[in-house]
Image (cartoon, rainbow, N blue to C red; front, side, top):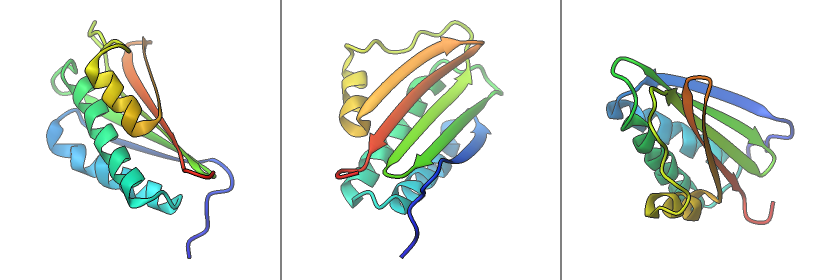
Length: 129
């Protein structure tokens, strides 16, 4: 059986800011969550959460830019930060339905717009971790 991450591992993927590339990020999410021994339901929830977070950001991403997905893997926890260049887009409010869905799927969710980038963070802790 694969070893659990004991220290922080960092994986960063950069893809064109185009929905056609989201399958790459969903696959990476599933692989990293499986490495942490998340359940199949938790893995699927994270895949959907990453897809939704990316869709929110892509709606306002300038054409020809890149979407960056940063995965921090620690023992029992996966933190995902999805970022795109920002040209004044507003992120969904924490009271919106989309935000409630993200929170239900990923656990802890936050966002920011700073230094010219819009970012959504998703943090999921494995049950029992």
